Image (tube, rainbow, N blue to C red; front, side):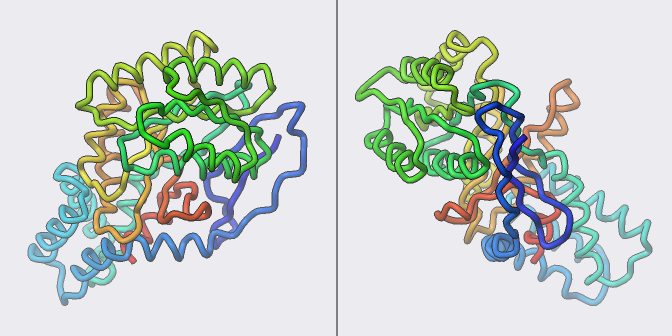
Amino acid sequence: MFSFFKKKNTDQPAPSVSTAPSEAASQQMPADRPRTSWLARLGTGLRRTGQSISTVFTGTQIDDALYEELETALLMADAGVQATAYLLADLKRRVKDTSTTEPSAVKALLAASIAQLLKPLEKPLTIGAHKPTIIMVAGVNGAGKTTSIGKLTRHLSDSGASVLLAAADTFRAAAREQLAVWATRNTVEIVSQEGGDPASVSFDAVTAGRARGKDVVLVDTAGRLPTQLHLMEELKKIKRVVQKAEQSGPHEVLLVIDGNTGQNALAQVKAFDETLGLTGLIVTKLDGTAKGGVLAAIALWGQSRAAAGGSAVPVYFIGVGEAVEDLETFNAQEFADALLG
């Protein structure tokens, strides 16, 4: 088995990309890489959100005014009405149960509440149960989808997995060329067709991935808005064609969302889930934004999804910048701590 682990500032490993055994990949696991610098970047990225919430706890007493200010701060951070109400109710219970009297101590209780809400989103991306593992990636234009695919390719390659890219985003100008640049950077193969049909490119890539013994086939689909019904139908077509090429696929259907878009990101998650049946999320651009609370809204939606017989859609990775190292595995406690400064 070969795995990709990153350790936090403690002895406990954070969620990881892990891969099941394969004959071609029985190699030494890469050394653990410290998360110290990553946590610093995450804290910097969420600073605006953290400052707006932290100022609530600078008063002298715990009263209705404090909770009203906190409600406003959470709504401004795009936690949403339902998640905000959930967190406030849970926080009041924690304050009562612990007999907390100092406003400064309430901040730690809120961090614990947020971490508990986000915990179901914390899950490692696992590959290797199928060869190749087919990962289909969707998202709206501008969310950072193709860049995230390039970064994910690097993570997978660093863990020892062989990756094949499918340039199925044939709608956007230069998308194929952009993905080709990432293929060159990561020294991986790419399947593309100039002006080709997205579903056809996907089929050829899956077939080639199986023939060449690749561990992962990453399919880059065209960026689109949920309101573009003809393009959403194209996504369904790609998924059907992938299933024709590999009956068990796609094994992961990921959505890349821009953390700056707040509640609109939640609307995207719901729409793409209805169309494709999402298995995971990549949240990008959490740097310099005051809207980091949207993950709380996504987590609460995940609870309702689970209650209906499904499961929460995990956040496999979050990004706080353009560099490869700015995409990291999601950890609920780390995020909650960074969110509150």
